[in-house]
Image (cartoon, rainbow over all chains, first blue to last red; front, side):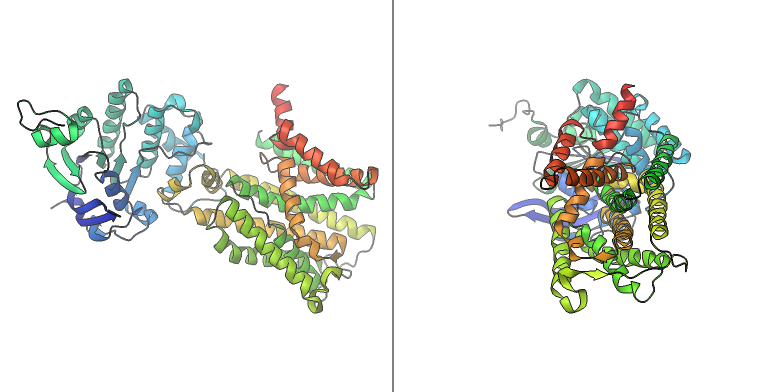
Length: 256
Length: 310
């Protein structure tokens, strides 16, 4: 077993809503795992529990064999788990270069008080990373002046700058113009494969999932309804009906 | 603005202060007070970077001033009293900071205000120790063991204030450009991101808070050494408000802003008080309204805007 992340029997309910109702999931080192499912199924909740933002009411999560449940987000980041956000979380009054440079500088965990942020070593690494994401042209632009697709990429670049072993991405392509979408994902996959990062991403676009995921996990009411290679899962009639919204051809259970 | 230009302007300003103090003797007192307040406002500027406004910063000014008053009888040496006062202010800042950095915005501001008013009441009510509203007179102090009197003592305090202003100004400027300084500014725009980068925002803010208390302490000690008399009014909320007023007047864009603002504030106050004795607060209010409406970047913003246009 080379499971990098291993969740067992995670349980969390918000009042009557079960966001996690016995989640068991192993993420293998090096794979790209896509999480799909309808709204409210608990996809983001899973990411929030893994990153220490939410505490499950039951179950356990281990990263690289070490239990991480109950650790603060900061400690979990220190172990090598980074995340990006559905709504990009950028420092709006800083430039793209400063945003990424701050992520690079924070990798040591202790911030210098007298060396400038944009000293050569950090500036070069940030610029190189910005280059890999194809963001050179906006490096000096303030984060609040970017379009959504670019903001998404910067958000992910900041997570990659932490040199994580596991990257959790919450809807990396939501809010991105359809025309840009594939380009962004191509860039992303190239960078992540190049850096050898294991990735878990929540995604609603089945083309993206089909093209980039090694495995797909289908979330439904706090449970994993299906898990397997995209070809198998995406062609499952039940998944097509509940998640993708395609009526099975000739089926008896036409959606209402 | 480049580092060289800013350093040049700072030295130019220092030279101007010395020249003015030499030419117009009574301005020596006004300028020393302005520099002392500028130091305290420099701390406010640090907190403003994180988007936080303290409405109780006078607590540390008063704490340091009373430290000078109480310890002055035992060790009447200015160069020992000043670091001692800054240390006391910094340590109390650490104790209070551990608590207040958990809060943001209006809660942060109001908690600081509340704590400073508690201290004000203590100073006012414990008459046997603090002499209440009468305050405490500070006897003569020595500088490096030298007993200076009259004019020489005034120059010594002014010199001390100038050195501290230049020193702390340079330190703050360097710190604001460091990863810590940028993370501090990040608290204002996206605090949660810091957590997910492995940085503790509260620790970042706590460093700023303690530094701000220590700088306010230096300012308070200088005020005590200049006025030679401390009263609870130093801890009153109007003093805190004055510091925030100066921060807005001067502008938060540069470490020169606080000193520019403090000089403008003190000079306006002196001249307005002489000109229209009963309405000087109104003059100050109109000046501030003018700054907010026409120069949101403060006086410093006016300077950089003028340079860009030129």
